[in-house]
Length: 354
Image (cartoon, rainbow, N blue to C red; front, side, top):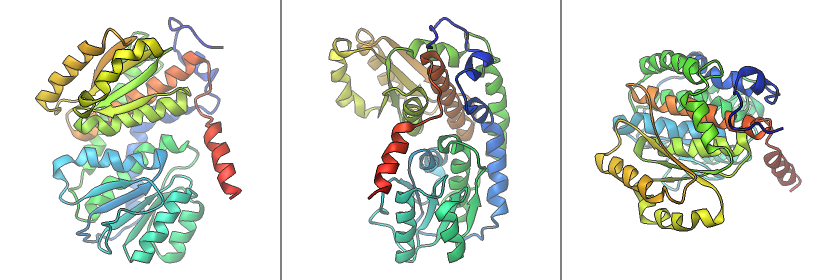
C-alpha cells in the first residue's frame, strides 16, 4: 500500500517494503569506497602506459562508474576516459587504448562483445566483475580481474565501478591517483548518511525531496560535473521507484527542452530538479535560475540541489548518495519494493531465446 507523502520514512516503514534490504547497500556506500580501493590493490595490476586512454565498456549500473570517474577527474585527466555503452568499442580505439570491461554479473552480453572486440584489436584489457563468463574468460586469457563484492544489485555497485575506473586511469597514465581523495570522501559520506538516512530528520533534504517528487515525473538537469549525476538519478528513479524519469543537460536544454515545458501541465505532473555544483560555470548558474523561473508555472515543483563537499570525489558521491536515497524513498512512498526489475529480466530472457 502506498504511503501518503506526509507519513514517516523511518526504517520500519522502509523495511516493510524493501524485501532485499537495498537500503543497507545504499547506506554502505562509504564502506564500498574503501573496500573498492582494497579490491583494486588486491588485483595487483602492473602499471601500463596507454597513450590511447581508457574505454570503460559496460551497461546500466556497471557503466556509470566510467562516466562518474570522468566527471571526477575533469581537467586533471591527460588522456581520454570514455564510457562505451553498447556491443562495440569506439571507432578510434587503438591497440594502445586500455579497455576496462565492467559487468557486475559478468554475463552482460554487450560487455562480453566489447571484451572480444578489444582482444581482436590487440588492446590491453582489465575486467571488473563479481564473476560470470567475463571473469572466466579473463582468467583464461591472463587478463587481470578486479573483484567486486557480491550480493548487491548491479546498480548498488556504483562505488566499486567508479573506483575501479579511477584507479585504472591512474595505472594507465591517463590521470593522477585520487586514492586519498576517495578515503576522505568515504568519511564525508558517513556524515551525510546520518543526515539523509532513515535515522535522519523527517524534514531532511532526501526525505523532503522525495515527498515533493512523489506523484510526479521527475525531469533532471545537470551541467558539467553533474551531467552524469543527473543521468544516475534518472536511472535510479526508473529502477527503484518504477516510474518514468528523464535527464538532460545545461546549457543545451535551454535551446530545446525549455520550450517543451509550455505544454507540461496539460499532459501530466512533471517536476524539475537541477543538480548544481560549486564549479558550475557562472553563466550556467544564471541559466539554472532563469530556467527554473520560466518553467515554474508548468512544473508541479522545482528544485535546485547543490553537491556537498570540497573535492570532486566528495561532491560527486554526495549526489550519488542523495539520489539513491531519494529514489528509494520514492519507492516506499509508492508502496513498491525497490529491488525487482522484472521488465529487464523479461527482456533478457527473451533475448536469450535468440
